[in-house]
Length: 244
Image (spheres, one colour):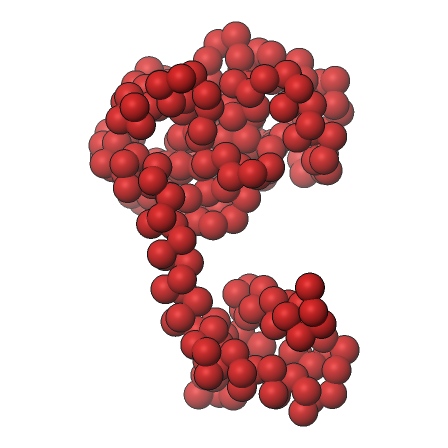
């Protein structure tokens, strides 16, 4: 990748987190302000960045449009969305759809809790393979050699005391998920959040995604979420049938 492209990608990544001043962009890249300004102006001209009234820069609407087009291009998302809406209407909690894309499980759809509680997850961002319900649900339905390949390349970070950061412990957890047909995140990424998740398989039995119901512990602890497992499994099965 050329240096100019690398710098442009770094700027877009930074602006996606929060608006940045010209000086912040220059410091991020380790370049003179004039170089950072030229890069920002190029991105602005292409619609990938835009200047705010206070002088800071943020992502441009063209980038948002491209991201939406990419999401719409994923066949699973529009097909699954009606099922997600029905599950959301029934439970009121946050509902996620995450798809296996290459070596990552990526959130491709999300319906926020009816109470307005927002989760850390974002559409387009990867989920933790080892510390999320959707990640473990997908792993539970993959062939053993594919699971080993993915875990070999994963950084098993311990996010909380409940995280399965040990390879042997994680593999044992995946086996439990496989046996019962659904996964749980019992405060493993954030200790105040829990969820239940189910894998989605196509007509040939290959896992392609997972659907989850997520809530703050204070609103719905794990034992209450597990009451939703039958609805969750039915939703996963319905999406799988529609996939053909």
